[in-house]
Image 1 (cartoon, rainbow, N blue to C red):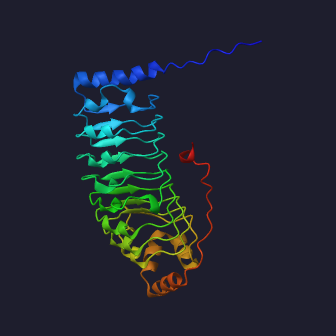
Image 2: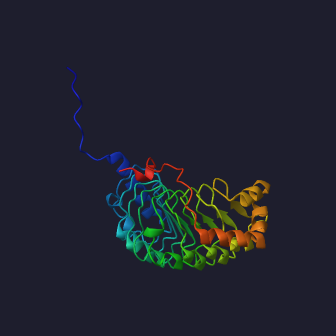
Length: 285
């Protein structure tokens, strides 16, 4: 008869002491950058002294198992870069958007089903990465699209069927990624984003595009336009075989404007969902 070893209830102090050591060393040399990547962390409350380091500008917490982001994170008033990628975060605190200097926020590869009210009030946020979560147009807060300092918005691998027309308010946006969603329509207001240089729409359920997108500067060598993996009407599909720049030219023709108008008035049923998202890591319990 084999004896199973007793199950230990003692926390993994080796991993915690590594994190504690990082904090202590940062205090000693007044280091503004804290690297806690892949330290086996499940809670930030277990790291004594972290929230008292008001001088830190960069906090890297990616590749851990953090589920809760404490409101006290807002104490780090000089924080410019916060990386929470690849954790188990299910919600973010309202206080996060009060960080006065935060420029880059990466919460990709998590388990978010929504964002807190007031999330859009970041004063200087430039790059927001929410790739690979469970977000859609219904669970974005009302002020999400007032972040006019935003230069890059990554919403790929989520559950969007529609992109709200308020996207047109983000006048400084240069990169927009909506790849691998369930998009069946994008708004005309995308054409207002005059500074856009990268648009990723691949892997959705799109059939047509608003003619206004044709006026965007997405045809140069320095620009990126990804449209593959959709259900385009044959004329767009034909142009796409020649290259994305040909699609942009075609969108501006009178022939296409008539086709688009007819399609939008007829409102045919959207193409079927092709991606099984039930097994996504972001859906894990």
